[in-house]
Image 1 (cartoon, rainbow, N blue to C red):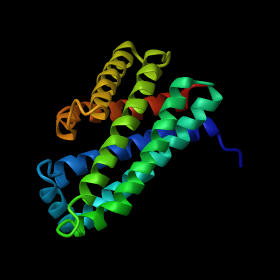
Image 2: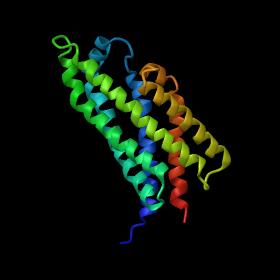
Image 3: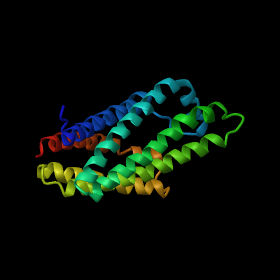
Length: 206
């Protein structure tokens, strides 16, 4: 059976983008992360670990899907933009390994060792900021150079990606907090939907 690798990669990109959209909605709307003190964060994590860890496991799967599909476009099209997107998602996998492996132990031992949770949390935020800077910078160039999208989608995707890339860089340099960064959450949801649409257009491209 012949498999059209381009279509497979494109649909994988769309599916991963939709899954990211769903998990972000679940995280922000249903989970509603505590953005206050470390004590509040650890209490919430301990009480809701089954749900929060399920979200992060789903996000890990989505990130792997996006890494594989973007790697295809990076190699086939010899695109530095798609390579940045691939590298970003590989870095993100490290973040989820840190969160899923370290968060529960750090949260449960917060009373005895209160320094552990801030350490693993700040590590996750640092990786989040850096990886999203790479991802969104890559996507800004993907959109601006696209010849298969309508002008309004092309420029909407470029603008959102560029703005969020700057926000992620500010987060990386501690000019913004994670709470500040998440204020623009609706924009990233729009971007994931645009990314899913981009995948469908790529699937139809000869």
